[in-house]
Length: 114
Length: 110
Image 1 (cartoon, rainbow over the protein chains, first blue to last red):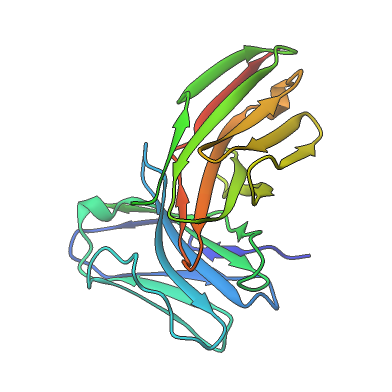
Image 2 (cartoon, rainbow over the protein chains, first blue to last red):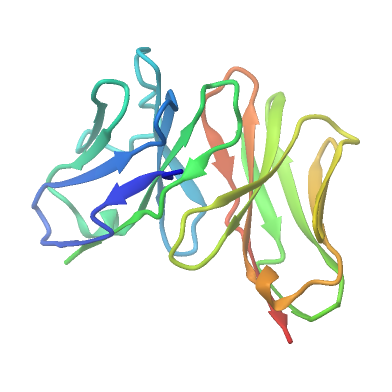
């Protein structure tokens, strides 16, 4: 079956521009996570969605970062006024529900801010 | 503060040379410890979940074990296709976050 998909696979943007990154989770998965992976760093938790509950935004590094999940499915991570330190691979993962620890990751979006 | 430390950062093995990767963790009440494999340019792929000290899980040439302070990923008679970065993560009781280590980059030489 189809796995988690993310788009675009690569994004180059100029400093100060806004970007939107998209995640399509596995159909039926209620839990969705966003992570950031920088070179030499571990995966950094950004935000977590579970069903219709309020998202856990505790990992978002600044108010320039926001995310939404429409209809309990597709999610969009938006970064406003991008900075060079935002350059990283942004990964999305989904799980059947919160009690399932098995996260299925997408291939990621590589963001480069010039 | 919850955290995960993996060692070594990089490991080169000859094909068939068994070894172990280490994951040390500090967490306020462990809900689960997780091992993932990540190939270049791809997202992590789930391998194992361990819940309590003494637990062991096996999959092909991989065996994961857990104590109260660390986990080991044992690789028996590795093959070149086992080359990847292996990531460890923990989740605390009552928390949503998964805390990941920086990984061990494994290279298996034919």
